[in-house]
Length: 128
Image (tube, rainbow, N blue to C red; front, side):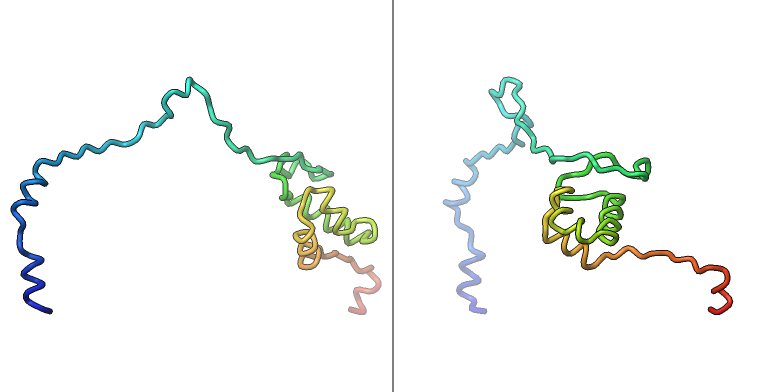
């Protein structure tokens, strides 16, 4: 807005320009490997896995899952076990058995309930 400030900004400083012409900058990407490592490899963090508990649907499921997670077949199995025997298959037992967090197991048992398919006898079908 003020003309004296704009003039100061656009004015060239010859001394500064001559000094800048003497500066030389060279830029390179860092090397891909650490120098002096002698072929050592740093250990990479591997995700800890566990074998799944395969039932009669074992052929349909994965064989290994990361700790803290379950496969689809395991989820269905533990939900069904809890539904059939809730006194035996408590949230605490499921958490220990499948290497899960207790809060996750409680949420799973609260929000996922397997449904049951019931077939009515032929004589009752007419009444329906």
